[in-house]
Length: 378
Picture 1 (cartoon, rainbow, N blue to C red):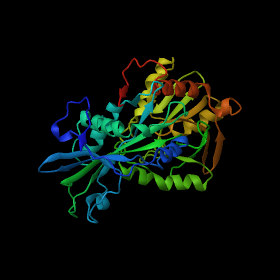
Picture 2: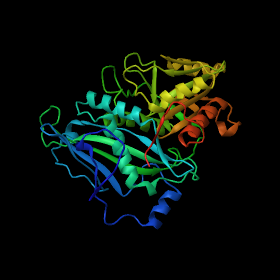
Picture 3: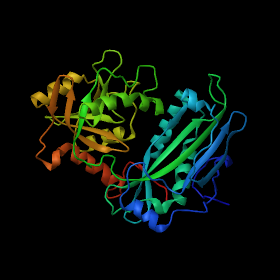
Picture 4: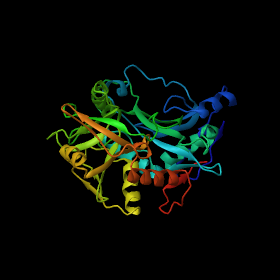
């Protein structure tokens, strides 16, 4: 057994032991996956796990073989959904090095989610060290910089493992990180997607868990997604739970509107909207490109009326998995609108394309990183 050396100030509890698997994937099998990775379908040889108990705190942090997790049928996560997760990517740069994009923001959001779900705190440096420990061991699984928009998707998570049916914060918890070579989230790449605007299915409510990254929010969105697919659309947009008129999220993504005068608007963080790391980055990058960015309440009718009048010229969604995805059509029970000029650049508007390019160039190390958003993992 060896240990990963990481530049971190975490305590001995987060000194990651490394238990290499005896049957790693062959170079040929790995190359086949990396040649055309699908999002979240294949996983690397190893994973990170660490345990927490009320009496000991965090302990037994290690990199070990990727394998099923054994939990009791009475585990709190199975009955009361006490769990959270994160999502971020590791990017291969042209010199072969591997970098994460703003992992400190993911760590901070992981802490906020843990507080909302009554789970223990993972220190920010331990969170980043866990990513580095896994990527250091499974570095060959990071796709080449020459393979287009590919990356190694990292999924940290925390689940309540205590076998107890009492309704209270669990006293035993598992933290883990798994990794998956990833291509574009949508098979169509940056081509526009269609959105179903629902007012009958609600994703999150004020005072609820909408601002936390927990599985229950995503489960609550699936009925809306099914509604969208039944109506011939690829994704669903949700409105608020009180007045059913204010735009919130598109599936698991934040939304942006581009106006004819160059302004960009996005729904303000209301407590029921997830604070996306990509969202925050888009706001800053759009300002760098000379756009005024408004974070405010946006009624669904403004989307419809703006597209009809031509005031809204582009709409796009942002997220870690999907990066920046243009929206080409919005439909609802008694209406259907096409957005923008789909004869230009496959329907990707110039503002959407410029922000998308700026973000990707930064993530893949093709442009300078003046804000220090990149953290080297390997």
